[in-house]
Amino acid sequence: MTWSDPQAIGYPLLFGGVLLGSIVPVVPTGAVVGAAAAVAMTTAHLNIVLVVLLATLAAFAGDVLTYGVARIGSDAAIRFVSRGRTPEQLARARQRFAVHGWQLVVVGRLVPAGRIPALVAAGTLGYPWKRLLPSAFVAALLWAVAYALLGVLSGGLFDDPIRATLVATGLVLLVGLVTALVGRYRRRRRARLETPETDPTETSRP
Image 1 (spheres, rainbow, N blue to C red):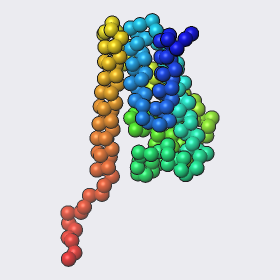
Image 2: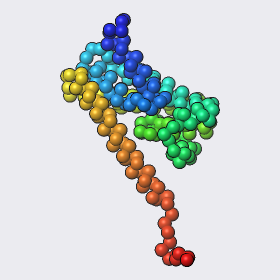
Image 3: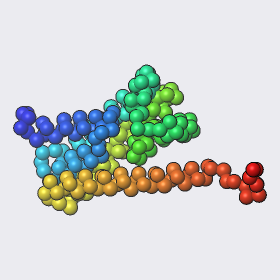
């Protein structure tokens, strides 16, 4: 196999892109998986089963590394993996994790902006490795299948791999946007419900 072979390029790009994006959230990992799945459905260059498998393993490895940094890393390392997340977000994640545990690992992987707070909460609370690893693997598998299905859908609609890839990327970004908006609405609604109402009978003192 040479580097002129699309398989030799596509599989490493898929694995490396998902792994990098799972550690440093600068790569839209869902779009990478969706695009690879679209290529697999419209060409013979990639295999859809291998796409899902590699995406799962890369996401799993990135999540375990993020958890490991939060579990045994220094304060600076924890700040690095949790950058972009407010202290309030991390505090809420810790509170929820104490109650729901492994469910947050799975849901956090599927919900935009939920993965890092869940993993950091798991690490800083000392969540056991033996419970984290199966939860993280199931979460990575569900995530890979979900985004691969968007690529399969676009590949079924278009025979052109370029068009199918663009549509798959657009679908992934659209799903992420809708999910983020729903999450923001739920957080604002929860914040309003948790904010104590002012008693109308109270009078302000001069």
